[in-house]
Image 1: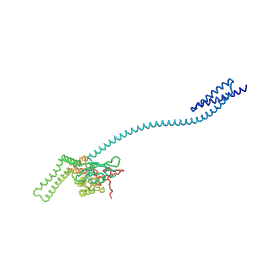
Image 2 (image 1 turned 90 degrees about the vertical axis):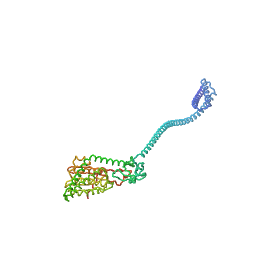
Image 3 (image 1 turned 30 degrees about the vertical axis):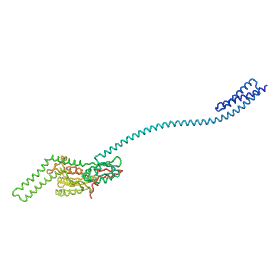
Length: 504
């Protein structure tokens, strides 16, 4: 009886263990979605059999069939567990791969989302840039149209300007020229070398004015200026023909006005020698006049008449302001010509004469006779102001642009109160002077584009300094234009010192 219980208890234990295995296996299988309907039915049957057997064992009424059923259930449970374990292992591998795929898809989804956001930002930026580019293109189109209008207007203004305008490039070639320039030059200058174009211009007594070639010659002034920061230069031609004629008329009117103001002085200058000549002529009628006295009176009459003629000639020269045609003359030749006339006069007065030319062949362009007369007038004044034993000096210096001629004496100087009126017509510090000499000197010098200055002192004497422009070499304003350093068109060089050559 005890043995039967023990056997029954062992079977009960095996049955419970089988049930647990079946329950666990069934639970695991239930967790999987791929579990079959057959397995679920078998699990239910096995569970019911197990429950019946357990209940019967508790009442000590189990049978042999129940024990076999329990063994069968245990075997089925084992087989189910083996299948469940195998399925679990397989499903676990699938789950790991699924998780990896899910992670990859999640990463891909995040990247796609970020890419889509970046694309949206990029698209917005492209639209913004496209709008800005459209506005910029519109602004450029507007500016281009304005520039075209401005260029057309400037071209029209350039063509309508009365002054001639030429543009010379770094190689000295004329690249642009308006109608006025071609009209003044008499032919088109486009594409030509500026040196060749300018060489057709003829110089005048003024270093800033030129005469165009041809029958209808015009007087033009010329200026140039660098064009921007480049190597090109712009040349400006002005027709000053009418202005020059008007200036001459104005100068003549000024001289006539000066004559009107000084008619009384002129009358005095003419009356005195005329009255003297008439007195001498009256003495020729005396009875018993000897031949020697007659010749002496005749010489005195001629002297007074020459004085009248000289006053009249100087007056006319001052009023008309006329001179000989312009020509080039060496400064040294002018000095030699003046020295030849004045040297005997100063020697007769016991005055030393010094003439020095340090111009190295420099030339002047203008009225040769007028320039020579001006120098001679200054030398005569110097000789008359110098006492016996004194010195009269004339010397000339030159730089690349100007010539300086200085006439000095060792006399007693000019009174200070006389300096402001010194160059006025008919003003003289000497009783026998006409007062026209210095006025004519100033007129001649200024007509040649120069200046005249005076310095005086009681101890050192008086010096008159004439500064005149040199004749241009060559005779045309040819700018040598270079890209690196374009030079000035018409160099003045006022501040350049006058070089003095050392005597050999």
